[in-house]
Length: 352
Image (tube, rainbow, N blue to C red):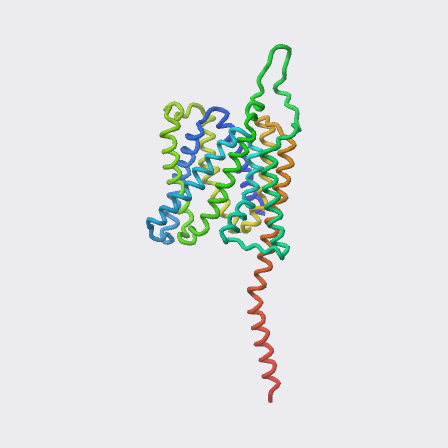
């Protein structure tokens, strides 16, 4: 029960981050200032914990390791968060969350290409992973290229006589395809970060320290971008409680609490069980975005989201069954050895 409550809380935190980030962009928070403040807060939260909890786990730092930390930050912080905010600016929180469901499938493709993931098309689990990947890519393609019909009528903005009022959501959606392409770049960056992180963690198993270094280099990279893009000092000032709330939520909840809670959930239930709950985030975001932001739902997005969720479950099912097939193959020699020992003992007892 504790694990289920923790997983539901985790998805609520993720869903809230989509809504809060959209609110931050709506009230005018800079797309560069927002991740800078977020990573500052995350670094202040994670670095003391890393220092205290991983004193005896940290291997010595080397130049190659620092270069790999820098590249991890470039992919997992700068590109990941930058593409996400750009995509969210042109699209909506609902479809940002829907696109994120394709990350496991994209990760599977990258890992397979690099030889880090086993694929056997002669078994059911291998076919399931391939079909699931195709379904996820197809769903993301539908969301990007096909908007479809609106499912909810927006009653907030109507044309009355000669008084034409601009619908802000429709104006925002004029670059829908561009927004989805940015979100696809976000998913690719996220998947690439997870694949690239796997060999780095083996070399440097102190995860909190590794995450702190990643946040640090990501912060440096965003500050370099800000030096060229965001030169207006007024954009760096927090001018309202709403801006302060969005920044604190992004730093404390989305970076601090989520990382800790997700790590605990993976330790208790395993990565597959945690990933199964990912599509619930899309449902929560859709409801929250419709109630809080008044976002419109479109048929193309629903069809694409269903395909992505279906593909996600196929990939996870294939991954789980692959483990079931591989584990008996590892234990069978030991079992056979035990059986042979028992037979030998029984034979020796029969000998006078």
